[in-house]
Image (cartoon, rainbow, N blue to C red; front, side, top):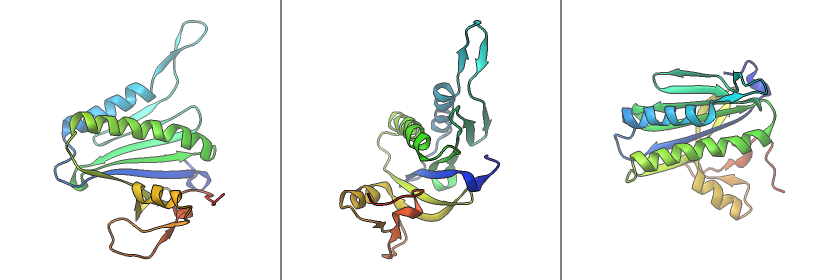
Length: 177
């Protein structure tokens, strides 16, 4: 994980299964292998020698890698919560994060469609404090509806609470413009 969590722009996306079980070992391993294959790769320089463009760490339920644009990705599965979590930190501001994070999320969604096409899920964003996701969440569909209406706040996901949360809680330096 990044050494200075305060200097990062954070994004935490989760794909939550609405029916259990969601995270099968096959699905979990496929996600990690696919992400490693697509985003952690060998490249050839001018002298025809191979150099590692990115490095990664893999553990039982997760994978971590950093890109050349100083964007760190940590993808974990939580079988007990039937969840795939993508935690992203950019040390170069919002632009590289917004360019690279959707590609990773899209790969997770492709693997879900391939391995569990009939599984009902919900995509949520989580507020991140000091590099740690919090319990404050909003469904991505609610955020999209709020943005379409040029709104500035969203109702939290799954709490039954109708108190809205400012979009700036989920997006670094967000402003309505």
